[in-house]
Image 1 (cartoon, rainbow over the protein chains, first blue to last red):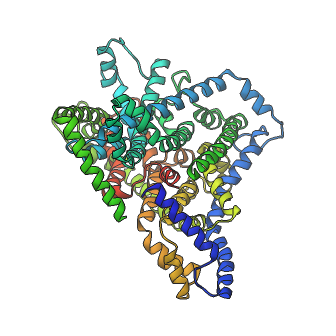
Image 2: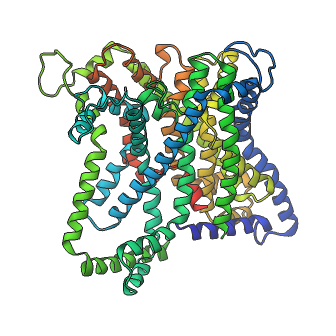
Length: 319
Length: 290
């Protein structure tokens, strides 16, 4: 289904509702419109209730907790913004923020580059193409708990596959779960491994929609492979690229299991992202106020960012 | 639809001509080998899980491949409980999530007031928030309501966290159903509710399946919510059960991987059987298409 036809049917759908049911008589039409309002309200009611209870309430309560000095049982006393100041003044917070940014940038662009490369390869006619497509989606389909277990095994001992390979290509003895830098690299590679199928699938469908005649025309005009790629392929898939970057950014920033299950945030907190830090501050260190403050800072930033990005996407889809 | 198929066919024909003329057989084999190599590297961890699950335990007299690990995990651990819990939680989540998201998605698709576009924006914002922000306050709430260490509590949270994406996915699918179908039903005297259940839903199986797969995977794969809320061994879902194997000093990889295989089989089976309806990002496809 192309974007165009969806937009068209959407348009038709909206117009249809606008006049309230085609050739129906006037009185009937008004009833139908009225009906719509109340029916729609009841249609949306269960979801509204769930969203209020499980999304709005927790966010508001988190805001409340973040300005109190409570523990896991009592809400505690009002202490203003002290939790925020405490958190913002620790070096740990900024180190976690820095790692979150690195992890997100590598995760988004790494998975995009790998996903695009494979999508381009798979676009050409090669034997057993569907088999490869299915196998390459496995990292996305397999539960993170399972793949983290598998990756743990890959680096568990010096005799495990990854340390052996690292040694063979000249990095010496690398302890992937013991050395801070190596652990950070490992977590980022793991994230790219999990996420590239998502990019591959989104970009494959975008590439499939590109008209092959454009390539023939550029060939006739004497464009080289690289020129064709940068001047035609990339612009043609720009909207999908943009949407996939946005979504992957959100997935990476909020990612808990990928990091926590592989390294637990260690060694010496080197791979602790903000989400992992918030979790550990509350549930391991029992410091509810500061932990919620970290989560709430992220929430505020993400609300602003997602509202801005959402507007951008809607604007670009109208154009 | 017909024009679309025609276009694809046309593209296929011209593509073949282009390739025969320029790339030739050598380019094709180079690409084939490249993709073969990439695929082999990518699936190493998954293949390793299968092989290790069939490898005899260290110090065992058996050689070659064995199913002993599977026998052991079913008899010596609470695996059957974990499996049952995971299945129950995932199925309830799927059924309730689809039942609640479908009508809401219909409103999002057909309605055109400012209120409804505001609702769409709120849903997008909600899906971009970190789960951990909601988990901490809900933990306090659930302790009070006695829903802590309770599968029902976990189900409620899963249903809540699928909601925003599930509504978006249903709405995106309803967008592709022409409103003329409903108009015909209205002229025949059907109510909005009647036309929704008898006309729209009946034609929405692919959309419902995609939403169901999405919710199933979310509930089946989740770790964070389960680890916060489930405390006793018999209430564990599979991800938490799998993690208990790492608490012992020496990891017995054979057993761990056998549990891992059991845990990844349902998603792989669902994916293999229904991969036509499998949508990668959930909200991704909906957002790119809308």
